[in-house]
Length: 290
Image 1 (cartoon, rainbow, N blue to C red):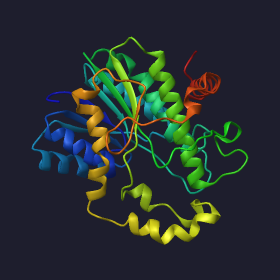
Image 2 (image 1 turned 30 degrees about the vertical axis):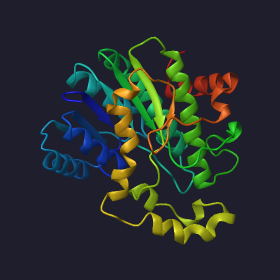
Image 3 (image 1 turned 60 degrees about the vertical axis):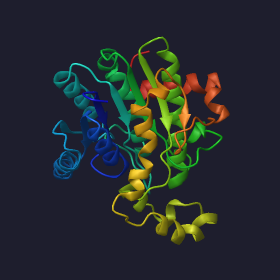
Image 4 (image 1 turned 30 degrees about the horizontal axis):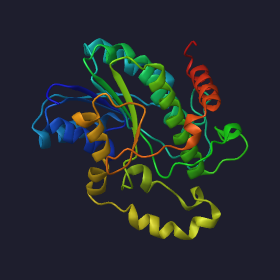
């Protein structure tokens, strides 16, 4: 990993920060993104201090905004001759239905449109690498079915269901992306990090759970109580594995579990009609020509 250039979105805290720290420790040149400059600067200094690696930089971006994603991609292309690894780590689990500046439901914008658009915009930088990897993080149990007519909560909005649906949609889109670029030097895989105490999980409210499951909320809160980054460090292992292991060199279009093992994706991922329709929809929302 020495001198590999790695971009990790949403890495000023939680799993992303722990991923950045480990990759910096093994000599990678790490770029982290975040929305808050103070938090970002603090994270960079901490990663530098604990890794002994001075090649850690911050680029500010709110990935819910397409203008920020485009600006982020432009900065990467201007400052770095290539990109070896892109880790789409940033995620959102919104408690209420809200629209972004682009008029997109926020979970769908951050969890689906953002990784697609950023990856698309950085394809040339990734192609400049001898062997590039794109890793996109899942979250929680993957539903078996995709609510095609409710992807942005148009009919009804249930916090965690919306989050899970957006992550399934993201898996479908990124699998299709991996098929679109077969034969290139770029691999694309998804991974599930496992449960961790992060700002996102600690922000879950009882109202975000289905009514039948709200009795479990106290247990969930116990599982996500602050632990000084221990669970986030453990949850970063699948991302680190996909970014650094030679065992997955050339492996693409796969899904890995928290134990870094290939695991089965829902059958709907392989439904070509669903996949192509969703791909076209996300391209249109992101303003990417067919």
